[in-house]
Length: 299
Image (cartoon, rainbow, N blue to C red; front, side):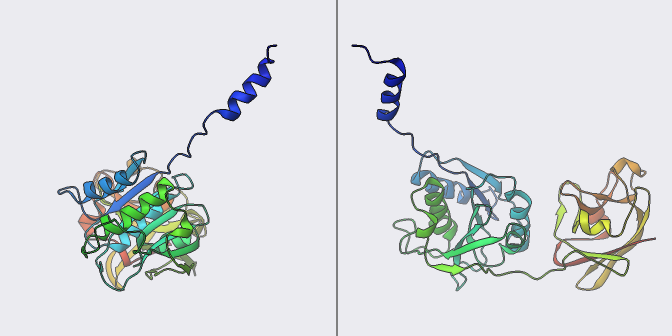
């Protein structure tokens, strides 16, 4: 007697081997550069944990020791990756010191493997951390690396991140729970008061020399600028005036003649300053970091 087709299909489905859960993306960020084998060694460790891992680069060109820029690049990109993505960020001037090695889980379901040295400052604000665990190096460390003290990016962070992304360990097995707080770097938040918008310069558009601020669309709207309005701009470093000038608020760079300054909203919808076909940062000697601030008023 022949089994009905649907019953036969159901039986075959039930006895078929179940496919394994696919590893989550592993995204690497360092200040190592690509001139030597450091990044390749990290990828080799991760690949050794699971050859099925998909490993991606955020950037390896963070300026040496620049924890603040690492914090910004994570914030700039993390939200565009799917939940479950594991980020390994290694800007670690205190390697081997008392600073903690942690994995932070956000409410969005992303994971960040990094030294707790300020790297998570902006992620904690924009994505909200739900739990932080200290990496237990007795368990989550590359076997045979215990005598190595200066390459935790390879021995601890890449190894732990790969194990988490590959599903070898759950988040609960990273190490002891620390709560939800992380080390934070102080800086000027975007504010509006008495007709003036204030903010920070978190980063430069390094290719073109444009100056990006953290003044978001909602804060800027309180100033009510329209395209063509003139803005008075002051830029300060450690409260010392570096630049003061007037420029139009414009939709595009071509709204002003070549070489002239303008204010505009960048791709993240934050207020920024530029020279049409020139480097604003280079011409006016402006840089970025938590100690840089801006003040903007309508003329």
